[in-house]
Length: 100
Image (cartoon, rainbow, N blue to C red; front, side, top):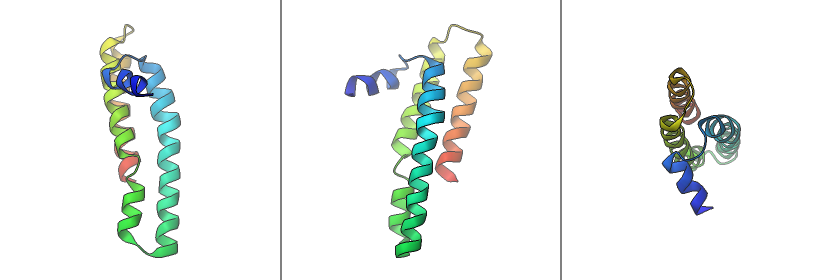
């Protein structure tokens, strides 16, 4: 597991896989789940601090995946346009996932 996270951090996993599987699929799911739990916690307890903590739980994962996509784009051998689009899209995804 630790090795896999290091490979992600270094950009050693293919850009398309990191973007579509780790960011869009897993990351979106994780952010939706924690948002739901945060909302449920707020409605049940009214605790703003606990709500914020739960809402921000996926933040370290989001940062890891942004770095992973960015670095894997450096190794992408296809048209440079796709690497640039992946970088822009993953930053937009992370901002939306973290702030909304």
